[in-house]
Length: 275
Length: 275
Image (cartoon, rainbow over all chains, first blue to last red; front, side):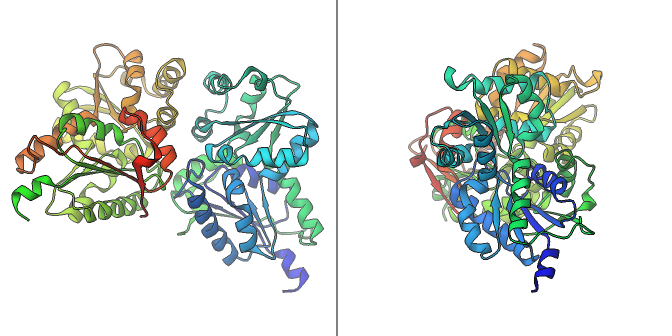
């Protein structure tokens, strides 16, 4: 394929469900002329409580499906899959590039708060693997990292109860599990793609001085830079097409996903595929 | 196989995850001499937000695995699978018996509150299918039924936050979505196997006069009666063995499942199987 044709190819975005639509939304804002294909593995979500072996297998199958659609870049929009399977997916996609959400989030947090105390809110699998801890400490040896699994916040965002007293009480209850020293961080990293929806709640709970780092927007910036670097970015005309694939439940995907993407969807907008 | 040998066979219990352990616990209490094999399809949970086609396929595969282990009775301990796939599983198990959790729960509610106003708390899939509504109205044409999807309560029970102000606020918030007339029911049916853990919260929220119907214990009573009827009940000596199978994540299964079963489990107690 010649270089001009390669630029026209879509970016593939993969997540366990609808959460990655926060990343998709950020990608569209950063690169409005790129074509995007999103695959949500809704038949097997959530990944956050599953074993690394299962997560790797599922992520590999999702990637294979996107490869068949001729993508030029794979964005792993799922924190759990990024934490577990990024290197495996890089081998599978080689020589085409892969970008996850953990590294850009960690880089942004370290840039915002050098030698800072970072609090990572994530799913159980992401916390167990220490993916953010490793990414933060490898960039800034003075970083102090606390990771906290907050599964309930995933359901809270899916239910659309993003603000108000219930959301704040749940966040405060999770924080109460931490030692005092970790409760006043310099940065809070939203280490699950569902959590940007709760940004207002985090802003209400944490002090104004805390940097709230959202890996959706940081990943979009990193993806844009990577395409430029590889001369794979599309010209700023045309494009902007969006294809939404899910492995199950188009109706629920449309209803919940619409909130994440920030626009109304109907089940007709979603193509159900088998993995 | 002769009749005596058939009585010695285990009862198979199937759920999408750990929730069905509340049913398993009730079965053990009702029939302490029966051998029990529990299969939690943790690799593909939750079923409650998936499509009927996927739920039926998964339930069929789980049943086939339990059939290979020579069970004498299948208990479908998952409300969603009972609502979606019970008839399919009955064909698959034929001539051996199958019991779900919806029918016993509905029967108990109708017996407790004839001509009553019933409030069914369940998952999205169970509500969409109207399984409890049908089961209630077919038994008592004067029954008034309201069904309410409460997905967040599933995560709440898995997190172990069963009591206290957060649990009560979440239940009250769900109830606030109902018309006034439905907020003061005669019975509340816990139409998801996770919900018996929150019984204390429901008792705090609802008036003392409300019958709280737990399909775990009603299903155990029904299973016991069915085995007696078919002369398939084991003699009251020996037995009482428990085998726990899961399709993923023995460590999490042990930690969360222990709360549901009401006894400590370690990952060594769980055999991970592939479906």
